[in-house]
Length: 112
Image (tube, rainbow, N blue to C red):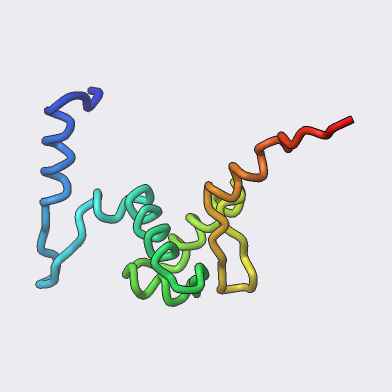
C-alpha cells in the first residue's frame, strides 16, 4: 500500500506520536530512529554550528545515536560533496549552495 494524501499524513503523525515502553524506559519509535529523520537532525546540527564544523563523537552524543549511524550519514553526504572530512572525527559543511555555485558556468562576457 502506498501512503498518499491525508491518510498517509495521518499514518506519519501516528508514527511520530507512538511511544512504547521498554524495560521501564522510554523507547524511540521506528520513525524517530529512521536514517532520513536522523540526517535532517544532523544537517540542522551542522547548520547551527558557529564554525560550520562538527565533531562526530559530539554529534552522536547530542543526537543520542550510535556513531556508526553518524558515519552512514557522513559517508553519503561526503559522497555527494555536501560535506568534507577534515580529520577522523571532524567534518565541515559545504552545503548545496556552494555545490550549485561550482556547477554554474562562468557567464562573464569578454569584450573584443
